[in-house]
Image 1 (spheres, helix red, strand yellow):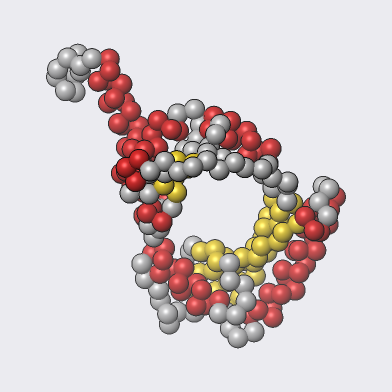
Image 2 (cartoon, rainbow, N blue to C red):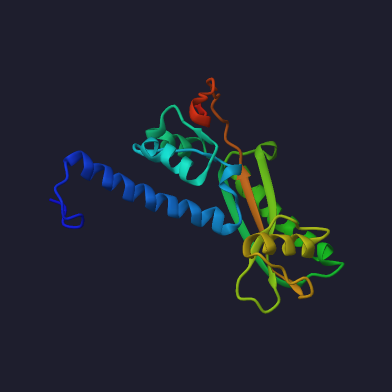
Amino acid sequence: MSVAAKRRVTATEAAYGVLAVVTSNMERALRHISVERGHDPRDFTLIPFGGAGGLHAVALARALRIPRVLLPSSPGALSAVGVLLADVVKEQSRTVMIEVTADTSRKLEPIFREMEKQATAVLRREGFPESKQRHERSLAVRYKGQSFELQIKTTSGKIAGAFHRAHQARYGYAQQKNQVEIVSARLKSSGLVEKLKTRVYPHSNSKGFCGRMI
Protein backbone atom coordinates (compact mmCIF):
# COMPACT_ATOMS: atom_id res chain seq x y z
CA MET A 1 0.00 0.00 0.00
CA SER A 2 1.33 3.44 -0.97
CA VAL A 3 0.69 5.96 1.80
CA ALA A 4 1.31 8.91 -0.56
CA ALA A 5 -0.90 7.63 -3.39
CA LYS A 6 -3.41 6.03 -0.99
CA ARG A 7 -3.68 2.98 -3.20
CA ARG A 8 -2.12 -0.41 -3.62
CA VAL A 9 0.92 -0.50 -5.91
CA THR A 10 2.91 -3.40 -7.27
CA ALA A 11 6.61 -3.90 -6.68
CA THR A 12 7.23 -2.94 -10.33
CA GLU A 13 5.27 0.31 -9.96
CA ALA A 14 7.19 1.15 -6.80
CA ALA A 15 10.50 0.49 -8.56
CA TYR A 16 9.49 2.77 -11.45
CA GLY A 17 8.60 5.46 -8.94
CA VAL A 18 12.02 5.25 -7.30
CA LEU A 19 13.68 5.38 -10.73
CA ALA A 20 11.65 8.47 -11.68
CA VAL A 21 12.66 10.30 -8.50
CA VAL A 22 16.36 9.49 -8.97
CA THR A 23 16.27 10.52 -12.63
CA SER A 24 14.54 13.78 -11.70
CA ASN A 25 17.29 14.57 -9.19
CA MET A 26 19.93 13.86 -11.83
CA GLU A 27 18.13 16.11 -14.32
CA ARG A 28 18.08 18.95 -11.79
CA ALA A 29 21.83 18.53 -11.20
CA LEU A 30 22.54 18.56 -14.96
CA ARG A 31 20.47 21.72 -15.39
CA HIS A 32 22.48 23.37 -12.62
CA ILE A 33 25.80 22.81 -14.40
CA SER A 34 24.49 23.55 -17.90
CA VAL A 35 21.42 25.75 -18.39
CA GLU A 36 21.97 27.77 -15.21
CA ARG A 37 25.54 28.51 -16.34
CA GLY A 38 24.56 29.61 -19.81
CA HIS A 39 25.27 26.34 -21.64
CA ASP A 40 22.72 24.79 -24.01
CA PRO A 41 22.49 21.00 -23.39
CA ARG A 42 21.61 20.55 -27.08
CA ASP A 43 25.22 21.41 -27.92
CA PHE A 44 26.65 18.55 -25.86
CA THR A 45 26.88 14.77 -25.72
CA LEU A 46 25.81 12.78 -22.65
CA ILE A 47 28.30 10.15 -21.45
CA PRO A 48 26.80 7.77 -18.86
CA PHE A 49 29.08 5.61 -16.75
CA GLY A 50 29.05 3.56 -13.58
CA GLY A 51 27.02 0.47 -12.90
CA ALA A 52 23.66 2.20 -13.39
CA GLY A 53 24.60 5.07 -15.70
CA GLY A 54 22.90 3.55 -18.71
CA LEU A 55 19.69 3.09 -16.75
CA HIS A 56 19.08 6.85 -16.70
CA ALA A 57 20.87 8.05 -19.84
CA VAL A 58 18.04 8.04 -22.39
CA ALA A 59 15.50 9.64 -20.03
CA LEU A 60 17.98 12.37 -19.11
CA ALA A 61 18.90 13.02 -22.74
CA ARG A 62 15.24 13.33 -23.71
CA ALA A 63 14.41 15.60 -20.79
CA LEU A 64 17.28 17.98 -21.59
CA ARG A 65 17.05 17.52 -25.39
CA ILE A 66 20.64 16.28 -25.55
CA PRO A 67 20.99 14.88 -29.09
CA ARG A 68 23.69 12.24 -28.51
CA VAL A 69 24.48 9.57 -25.92
CA LEU A 70 28.04 8.20 -25.97
CA LEU A 71 28.29 4.75 -24.40
CA PRO A 72 31.66 3.51 -23.06
CA SER A 73 32.30 -0.17 -23.71
CA SER A 74 32.96 -0.83 -19.99
CA PRO A 75 31.00 1.84 -18.13
CA GLY A 76 31.41 0.18 -14.74
CA ALA A 77 35.20 0.37 -15.04
CA LEU A 78 35.37 3.82 -16.64
CA SER A 79 36.49 5.61 -13.47
CA ALA A 80 39.23 3.06 -12.79
CA VAL A 81 40.47 3.26 -16.37
CA GLY A 82 40.39 7.04 -16.12
CA VAL A 83 42.63 7.02 -13.07
CA LEU A 84 45.18 4.84 -14.88
CA LEU A 85 45.20 6.98 -18.03
CA ALA A 86 44.72 10.45 -16.55
CA ASP A 87 47.49 12.99 -17.08
CA VAL A 88 49.50 14.01 -14.02
CA VAL A 89 48.35 17.56 -13.25
CA LYS A 90 50.01 20.23 -11.14
CA GLU A 91 48.28 23.54 -10.49
CA GLN A 92 49.76 26.80 -9.27
CA SER A 93 48.28 30.18 -8.42
CA ARG A 94 49.88 33.55 -7.68
CA THR A 95 47.89 36.42 -6.19
CA VAL A 96 48.63 39.55 -8.23
CA MET A 97 45.76 42.08 -7.71
CA ILE A 98 46.43 43.94 -10.97
CA GLU A 99 43.99 46.34 -12.64
CA VAL A 100 43.74 45.60 -16.35
CA THR A 101 45.56 48.24 -18.40
CA ALA A 102 47.48 48.39 -21.66
CA ASP A 103 50.66 46.92 -20.10
CA THR A 104 49.01 44.15 -18.07
CA SER A 105 50.39 41.40 -20.31
CA ARG A 106 53.94 42.65 -19.74
CA LYS A 107 53.45 42.47 -15.96
CA LEU A 108 52.02 38.96 -16.11
CA GLU A 109 54.63 37.40 -18.40
CA PRO A 110 57.46 36.99 -15.82
CA ILE A 111 54.99 35.58 -13.29
CA PHE A 112 53.83 32.90 -15.71
CA ARG A 113 57.38 32.12 -16.80
CA GLU A 114 58.47 31.54 -13.20
CA MET A 115 55.54 29.21 -12.54
CA GLU A 116 56.22 27.31 -15.77
CA LYS A 117 59.87 26.93 -14.80
CA GLN A 118 58.93 25.42 -11.44
CA ALA A 119 56.28 23.12 -12.95
CA THR A 120 58.66 21.92 -15.66
CA ALA A 121 61.23 20.90 -13.04
CA VAL A 122 58.64 19.08 -10.91
CA LEU A 123 57.21 17.13 -13.86
CA ARG A 124 60.68 16.26 -15.10
CA ARG A 125 61.46 14.70 -11.70
CA GLU A 126 58.31 12.58 -12.10
CA GLY A 127 59.53 11.21 -15.42
CA PHE A 128 57.97 13.57 -17.96
CA PRO A 129 60.38 15.18 -20.44
CA GLU A 130 59.46 18.63 -21.71
CA SER A 131 58.07 17.07 -24.90
CA LYS A 132 55.47 15.29 -22.70
CA GLN A 133 54.43 18.40 -20.80
CA ARG A 134 51.68 20.93 -21.42
CA HIS A 135 51.22 24.25 -19.61
CA GLU A 136 47.94 26.15 -19.70
CA ARG A 137 47.70 29.71 -18.43
CA SER A 138 44.55 31.32 -17.05
CA LEU A 139 43.46 34.26 -14.92
CA ALA A 140 41.00 34.73 -12.06
CA VAL A 141 39.30 38.02 -12.91
CA ARG A 142 36.54 40.17 -11.43
CA TYR A 143 35.06 43.63 -11.56
CA LYS A 144 36.88 45.76 -9.00
CA GLY A 145 34.97 45.49 -5.73
CA GLN A 146 33.33 42.13 -6.49
CA SER A 147 33.77 39.33 -3.98
CA PHE A 148 34.03 36.54 -6.56
CA GLU A 149 36.04 35.86 -9.70
CA LEU A 150 35.64 34.14 -13.04
CA GLN A 151 38.43 32.12 -14.62
CA ILE A 152 39.33 33.06 -18.20
CA LYS A 153 41.97 31.61 -20.52
CA THR A 154 42.86 34.91 -22.17
CA THR A 155 46.13 36.01 -20.53
CA SER A 156 47.33 38.61 -23.00
CA GLY A 157 45.79 41.17 -25.32
CA LYS A 158 42.12 41.97 -24.74
CA ILE A 159 41.73 40.57 -21.23
CA ALA A 160 38.95 42.96 -20.22
CA GLY A 161 36.90 42.08 -23.32
CA ALA A 162 37.27 38.36 -22.64
CA PHE A 163 36.12 38.88 -19.05
CA HIS A 164 33.08 40.95 -20.12
CA ARG A 165 32.04 38.13 -22.46
CA ALA A 166 32.55 35.48 -19.76
CA HIS A 167 30.51 37.53 -17.26
CA GLN A 168 27.74 38.01 -19.82
CA ALA A 169 27.63 34.27 -20.55
CA ARG A 170 27.57 33.28 -16.86
CA TYR A 171 25.33 35.95 -15.33
CA GLY A 172 23.45 37.45 -18.28
CA TYR A 173 24.98 40.92 -18.09
CA ALA A 174 28.30 42.73 -18.30
CA GLN A 175 29.33 46.07 -16.78
CA GLN A 176 31.45 47.41 -19.63
CA LYS A 177 32.38 50.64 -17.84
CA ASN A 178 33.58 49.01 -14.61
CA GLN A 179 37.27 48.53 -13.87
CA VAL A 180 38.42 44.95 -14.42
CA GLU A 181 40.84 43.47 -11.89
CA ILE A 182 43.02 40.35 -12.06
CA VAL A 183 43.07 38.61 -8.69
CA SER A 184 45.45 35.78 -9.52
CA ALA A 185 47.49 34.20 -12.29
CA ARG A 186 46.98 30.46 -12.58
CA LEU A 187 48.89 27.70 -14.32
CA LYS A 188 47.75 24.15 -15.01
CA SER A 189 50.71 21.93 -15.91
CA SER A 190 50.18 18.40 -17.19
CA GLY A 191 52.47 15.42 -17.61
CA LEU A 192 50.97 13.67 -20.62
CA VAL A 193 50.27 9.95 -20.15
CA GLU A 194 50.08 7.72 -23.23
CA LYS A 195 46.46 6.97 -24.09
CA LEU A 196 44.86 3.67 -25.09
CA LYS A 197 43.73 3.16 -28.65
CA THR A 198 39.98 3.50 -29.09
CA ARG A 199 37.48 1.70 -31.25
CA VAL A 200 34.49 3.57 -32.67
CA TYR A 201 31.37 1.57 -33.55
CA PRO A 202 28.58 2.56 -35.98
CA HIS A 203 25.83 4.94 -34.93
CA SER A 204 22.41 3.83 -33.81
CA ASN A 205 19.77 6.05 -35.40
CA SER A 206 16.93 5.01 -33.13
CA LYS A 207 14.62 7.97 -32.44
CA GLY A 208 17.30 10.54 -33.09
CA PHE A 209 19.83 9.16 -30.62
CA CYS A 210 23.16 7.66 -31.54
CA GLY A 211 25.13 5.23 -29.48
CA ARG A 212 28.88 4.88 -29.61
CA MET A 213 31.29 2.71 -27.72
CA ILE A 214 34.90 3.54 -26.93
